[in-house]
Length: 257
Image (cartoon, rainbow, N blue to C red; front, side, top):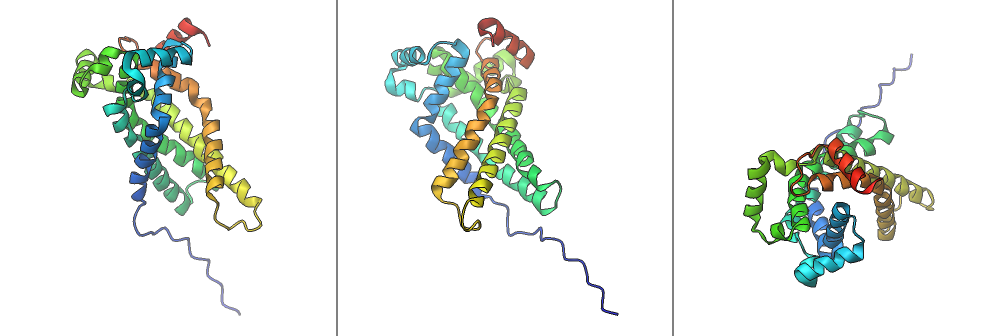
């Protein structure tokens, strides 16, 4: 009788080393974004979420307090600059979780991107929360903006303890996890669609195609904006109740839905 054929070997799970280069790529990308206008857009967003004032009015107020350059980089040094570290965990953690899920066939293929995106986003939340808190204080209060960095930290710790630096952490984990889950999932689907339209689906994607897939993923992730509003308001100076339910009630009372 013919010899029985042996089952195919399982896919290899070995690789040379983890993708440590992503630890540097993430912060470098964030730094470039923040220095070229991304930081000021964050400042305007935070101020809008706390005050409800129109963007032109917020801009004029910031410029009158700090000048054009001061307003553009308000809260940037050192908190915004330190916040570049938020790019450190997300790409690395997402890449490592994706590798494990794929290599060991832990879940179905269509669930790899969402799960790895959530893992990267939650990891990012723990890096972002303290510096986001301090940046919000600098945006909300000229007094905090003029303080030396260590004095701001001492002020928060004296008032609320060390955990005061992590106000809004639960909402931050929810928002960052959902945000990166949507970004990676939608971007992956857009890439698959673009490849399916090519004459050679295996051909490398062009830079415009990669940028387009990223933009679409980022646009869809904007559905997490209400959670971001809760985070910002939970980190306002002088707020006593910072749990998500109390903050949502305060936002609704001040400005409605």
